[in-house]
Amino acid sequence: MSVFTEKVVLVTGGSSGIGRASALAFAKAGAKVVVADVDVTGGEDTVSKIEIANGEAIFIKTDVTKAVEVKQLIKKTVETYGALNCAFNNAGILGHSSSTAACTEENWDRVLNINLKSIWLCMKYEIPYMREQGGGVILNMSSIAGLGSGLQRFPAYTVSKYGVIGLTKTAALEYAKVGIRINALCPGFIHNTPLFESQVSQNSDFKEVAINQVPIGRFGTPEEIAEIAVFLCSDKASFITGHPMVVDGAGSMSRYVILNK
Ligand code: NAI
Image (cartoon, rainbow, N blue to C red; front, side):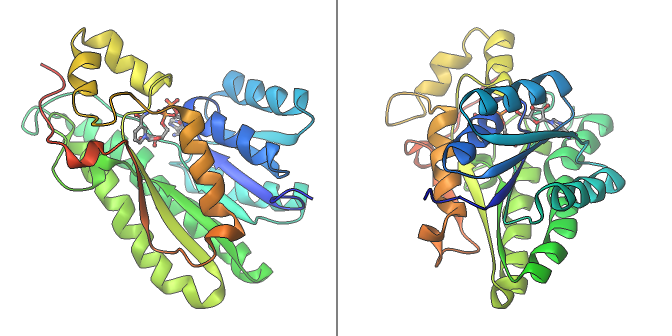
């Protein structure tokens, strides 16, 4: 029997990048996976990749910034598979690169809504189901941008990722006694995702500048993050809660420089 046999796992932002790799990894570990995203083509593609590998998954189109859609997502998940054991609240965007003074209100609101408000909304509707079924595990996507020094030219992103860690710790304290573990994941630079590659296409120096900030000497892969997501959601991590797990090749120990001109 696999680690996640009979378990139902929700992955938001599962249409590409880290979310897709995680959905595939959870399915490989035996879970029934619910993929949620605004990107329908990508979401359906993730599901078919899981099915080709003999896994089980469904896609539910969801904008995680909208309470009514998140509520419906959780309801449909439980109606379809009868439970919600783990949720990886991963959807997020980088937003535009600009200094703090130049950041627009539109960019600020968009980034904070997708990266932070969505995490609160997801937990708001996931937690009551998990309580009712006697426990569960939640993993919220932060970043090393939410730790230590700020990330120049990405003020909204930095604030959103700091916020995810604060929210994760608060919720972890509130629900520890009812069997719900809640952690955050803080990756460093993870390449081969649309979010990362958008920076590469906008700035010819990006790769070189970024890699110099990773002591291990390379970028991480979505699959490496997926492995940690699976571990943190498994019973092997049963004594870990309220923890921001750093997976960054020691990147958070090096000093940030300006990534975009
Ligand atoms: P990605 O762009 O491949 O994945 C993000 C997914 O979120 C996309 O499928 C997108 O359609 C979805 N999404 C965006 N807005 C949404 C909304 N309103 N509702 C539902 N889904 C929505 O990017 P990647 O790199 O896989 O990032 C995933 C998460 O990991 C993000 O939260 C990001 O901030 C975080 N992260 C990424 C790092 C990297 O270097 N790639 C490093 C640290 C954190």
